[in-house]
Length: 284
Ligand SMILES: NC(=O)C1=CN([C@@H]2O[C@H](COP(=O)(O)OP(=O)(O)OC[C@H]3O[C@@H](n4cnc5c(N)ncnc54)[C@H](OP(=O)(O)O)[C@@H]3O)[C@@H](O)[C@H]2O)C=CC1
Ligand SMILES: O=C(O)C1=N[C@H](C(=O)O)C[C@H](O)C1
Image: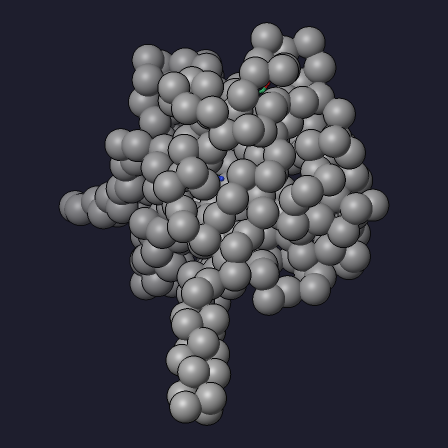
């Protein structure tokens, strides 16, 4: 009898995923709000903190007020207050904000899932340094579809390595502040890597005036900004007599938020280190 009770209690404990206490930076932003909603709906996650910039109208408001709910978590500007109850921070803000948040995460032993784009090389090196002390997952795009697209591009670039001009075209909403998108740059890195090139040496980010003929070794980028486009990316392999286009289109930010929660669950087993969505999705 005793044995059977303890067995069933062990079973129910092991089948319940551990609760993850999550803080969200940029809580009133487009992704921040999407994440507040996703955390609210995930049975294994709990909102444990919400951050925004000092001076933001959102400071002091309940993080879920925009949904018509009360979460009991107020949006604060003070990093220590916002992180004190959290195991992991999800950050979709701006590079300078993310770096400040990561410094606090390192101090407090809080893990981080970073979706922010637009980091400089120096800022990326800083993140790698911090990841020696805490577990960090950083990815310019957390949708499963985009990460599978990276893999397709690797294969396509290898198979189309000569005779095809490569152009990356992305389109985003009018509020986006960085260009090309982090995803487009990552696509360029994946393709350049597959071709044995360094993107720094072969990227062409703008064309105007008398540009001369296209250099076949280059990878061109074009960025469109307008309206409420969530995020479209096309890689064009233009040959003679044919062209191949690999396109991903996001119709909702939900996929990014769900990807971020997958990353949160993945990090639960990690002590320190720098990871990306290939690690989270088992695509490496
Ligand atoms: N990896 C991925 O899958 C995705 C990445 N992104 C990236 O996420 C980032 C945010 O995108 P989005 O939500 O659309 O942007 P928003 O502008 O809607 O939200 C950004 C949030 O961060 C806050 N913020 C701005 N600057 C700072 C700072 N220096 N320190 C702290 N907080 C700051 C803003 O506050 P305030 O409003 O007061 O300025 C706002 O709450 C971008 O870099 C974007 O490219 C977006 C979607 C998917
Ligand atoms: O700013 C956005 O919106 C997006 N940013 C990311 C990027 O820069 O690649 C991801 C997605 O495209 C949406």
